[in-house]
Amino acid sequence: MASFVSCAGVTVIPPELKDQVDRTVTFDRLRETPLSYKERLIVLGGVVLSAKRLKEGTRIEVLQLPLDKGLEPGGHLTDSRGRFIALHKEFIDPAALPPLTRITVVGEVVGAITLPLDEVDYVYPVLVSKAMTIWLTKPPAFWFRPYPYFGAYWGPHWGPYWGPYWALYPVP
Image: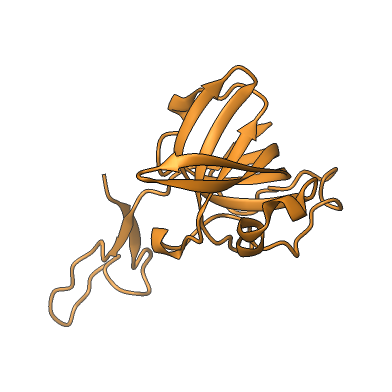
């Protein structure tokens, strides 16, 4: 199951899986010894690097990023501790997961796979996705003052006591 979301307060971990998730497993520990965490249910997030359709589902290569309190990946790409593979049993069109799409995966650790990464072989921890949240991109915005000030007289709706003083303006 994949869910598309756009706001805070989203339930990332389904209620039936909440008690099964092992929150003690960090990505660093998983990356070092992925086989020792086999069959554990964990939550990881990051940005999609690539998505590939396979016969048994969709393979998603993810650059891990730290999760905030709402389990949404955030921070800079340089905050990443590595990469992981999420295997999703259902079909997700790779066009729906373009690079840099933020996702959170609730998945069962099934081991590791070694794949070429540039000129080296990289060991990816592998999760089988039980639930996945695809986060919508947030458009950039800046704050502006909608009404100008002229001299000592502000006029109706121009001062701080007469309605909107600041407004959010999305950048196209």
